[in-house]
Image (tube, rainbow, N blue to C red; front, side, top):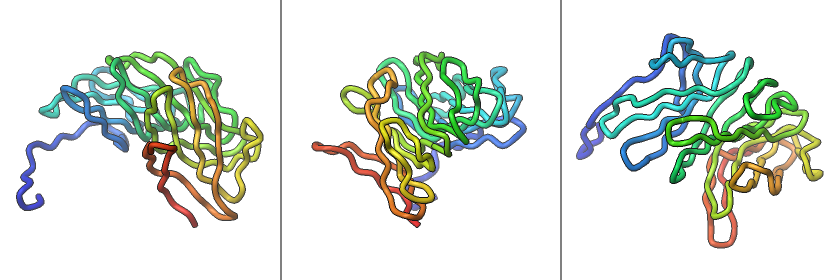
Length: 212
């Protein structure tokens, strides 16, 4: 432990296979863990529906598990980030499934995916974004009238005439409160770029990520 910051508690969550936590959101009475689950024996009877699923684990302030939920289709689906709302959560990730509940399904190699749940993890809506290439959402912020998600794309046929400029481009998707896309933008050069974090500014947004 870092001097002056002793560990209060440590907990393990998951099942018998590889279950990965990638994001953490503070709520009034605990935390929400977002990630990717491969296990068929998660506590509470939850299990991955495909190769991997988006995984949410709700825990209290002492680290005790309140509920586990998984979301996805028959292929590989992953969760990366989430934001807390007054009555639930919105989660960003990616999907390779063509049979997602409540969504159009994968349009390419994999699609960016946003899903909205209520405070108990029940699915409210599910939306996928992308073209015929590989599209992934890694980060998410809430704005006054919707959401902004960031990630990377290799698609050359994104809606609105947007296309990847190189091997892989930094990709932003702006939506309304129901997940309907308002605009998409790709940024980069001839190499590989991706967004890993976003912040909201007074006059726009800032993204950080990788460029190679």
